[in-house]
Length: 196
Ligand code: 3AM
Image 1: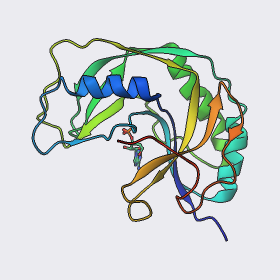
Image 2: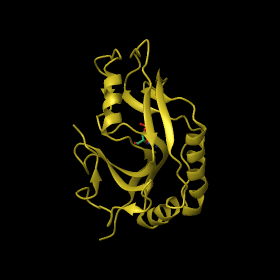
Image 3: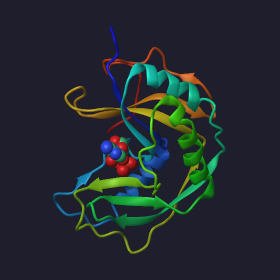
């Protein structure tokens, strides 16, 4: 069966202990009743959103990403903000290494036929949407997050998945080339993120 294009993005997804710290941080905000919080397990930083990618370009992409150098990063999530598009976010302190990783990935994308999505990289973890009236905590205890890898993620949307979920297609970094194969086509295989 031909694999239909998959909605992919490249990002950083923390393990459960950091997911828990982010969730705890969220409890310190004052949220409007109609805010739509991000689900536990899905907290992440998007590096490059790619949109729908066919099987051929996906293979090229994965091969190219395996060659991207990954140096461990110590991120500090410490800046809560509400953006004009009503998204509430937690941002890391400026980190040259994070920008450099973003840039290195951007460099390999054109050869795969894919274009970087956001020429301006504004790293953030989305906490909630529809949160224009949210109030961040007066003080934020920084969350230290050691990053050893980046991941290629399949964003499986409703009705393909109910509820929509993120599935890690491949990890790049500390354990290079540790692919989950064959790639899942129906959302029933592959690595699913632990959601509550
Ligand atoms: O990291 P965040 O939560 O800001 O908003 C979507 C989410 O980003 C973003 O990709 C991430 C994983 O879904 N996204 C969705 N559609 C997008 C698009 N067309 C997009 N980013 C850029 N362009």
